[in-house]
Image (cartoon, rainbow, N blue to C red; front, side):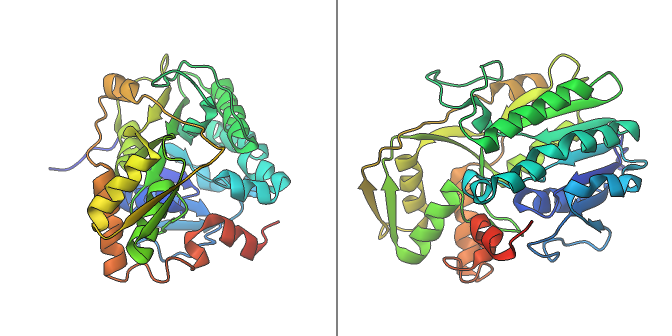
Length: 331
């Protein structure tokens, strides 16, 4: 059966990252015409197809690359300095990449006839809430500059959206699992790495809630939005997560998968912030269903460690964003 594409040509800004690499490979395997714009600071060997169009460039100079937007049906914007520690290394650099260049980017997309623009925001935009499951209509109270600029970019999306230019905002939970461009500085991945190699996990606090999503489901959510016939006129913001687990429960799941010999040590902490979001809306409105869970993510990482796909995973800077940012000294 030949698949008929309504959105054939896809441009991924930041497609060389943790999620972007897996999304790119998945789209190509489905027959999409994919272009990736990225600095490729983690290398270009994360892709498994020669059909991919790779454009090396800095998102802050996106106006010099307007030609790459011609005939593009959908833009997915993933590029940013991700996580607070990496952002805090150089706040001005963080602002220039995560916010200042965003409006020119979205304007170029609209001016060139792009039909869908999907923005990767963050579930951190809500800040700390007492609500059991935070929904998309909750007030936004970001606690860090990283999250504040996510909110400001969302506002730009609202400013430019209309019936012919649909802007869709996804607010992902913390992604976990194996990727060709691996990150090991995210909660589930951190604990799995330590458990596998040290047979010991240190949990600070443990009662804090954390929303998570398997990377394969995160990729599936982007593709689901690309392929959806939903008009996104009235509803264009969606949380994307799996479940909200206590950190200590995540540690127990890791132990169950990695081995009973893994020990867990709980250490008191003053940071008892909890984040918890509801992903019911994307299920009900877009009929998106998760297919993978935390055990799957942990098992995938375990297999990658045991097969030596991920080498020197406790020390190699390529797996840790803040170490890479320190080493490349991007300006």
